[in-house]
Amino acid sequence: MLIGLTATLFGMTVCAEEDGTEAIEDSAESEGGEDTGDWTDYQLSIDGDVYTFPMMYEDFISFGWVLNDTEDTLDPYSYSIYYFTKEDMQCSVYILNLGINTVSIEDCIVAGISIDSYYWEDIDSTVELPGGIVKGVSTLDDIAAAYGTPTDTYEGDLYTEYTYQEDYNEEVELTVYNDSGVLEDIVIENFVEPDGYEIGEISTDEPQDVMAYVKPDTLSDDLTEYEIELDGDVYSLPVPVNVLTEDGWEIVEDDSDSMVAAHYYGWIYLRRDNQTFSTTITNEEDYATIPEYCWIEELSVGGYTLDIDGSLPGGIKIGMTEEDFLAVLDEAGMEYECSDSGDYRYYTYNSPSYGYGCEVEIYVGDDSYFEKDTIIEITCENSFD
Picture 1 (tube, one colour):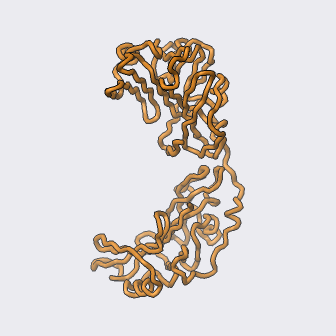
Picture 2 (tube, one colour; picture 1 turned 90 degrees about the vertical axis):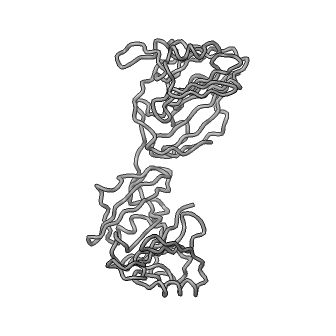
Picture 3 (cartoon, helix red, strand yellow; picture 1 turned 135 degrees about the horizontal axis):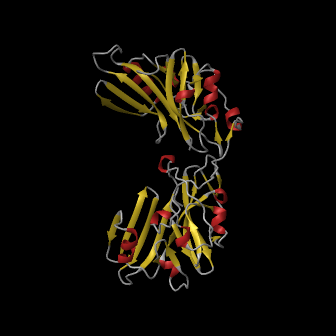
């Protein structure tokens, strides 16, 4: 499966649904109500049934298509390619979730279709696009006459492909093979919201995993623990946002996301005693939730942003000298990596892979209010798998 589009890739264009039994020329209408016969209608007709993309899953299968794959779910802002059959025909379609909750593909959008000549060879069917472009009949000249100069052209040893594109994932690809000289492969993608699409509801119920979180009383001496102390409060990471709000941190609502979609991330600003910091938050649930019930996987203290006391396991803290810090690592047998950047030196340890580890920043310059050769900022990160 192909999964992983971000929300920023999806537009909010509204597409009207059409009656699937209409002739394609009659159903391709512009805002003025006139027939356009244009590729931007994102339509095709298969044996007289007209498909306008995007359409809802239930509308697509109403034409008689049967899913070949196992029923599945999709996370928000993601898509997958699934195969369907109808009698002797087979196609692949782009199924898209533009909602905020993880849902069955039955509740998702069919945002496009791919008709591959490999699966349609010797099949007695008629596939037609707006403007009178017909699979197995129309030539490159016919396509150019109907749709104009393509956005992009690929000319290979076996085929020529015309791509007509409005935006990313809003395009039509038409392939003419050199040996036949006619249109054989068709791909339509239109990753926008259908008219009347409902994105889903936001839950305000506290998840069980959030309720089960246990906040440490004190900072561990074990350097392999992903813990951090902020001005006297100790947190093991990941930590739910509501644990920090219970300790007096206030969510700056105007600068924070009001909700986070299922299995997605957002941004939050927190403030306490005139100290403010921002960080990403993740939602581990199958449904959209409020920021309070999301998780913080990384926390930093010190430096130029959060001017409060901070410590890591083993007594590593803001203001410690580089010499004392290295002595702690050496005594624990902890391996580390070191790199310099201008007036700053960075140590990373307890980092078996990306998304996990502790970082210590040390000032090594001469012209700052920071004391030379001391820790000025610490960071701890522990991501969900």
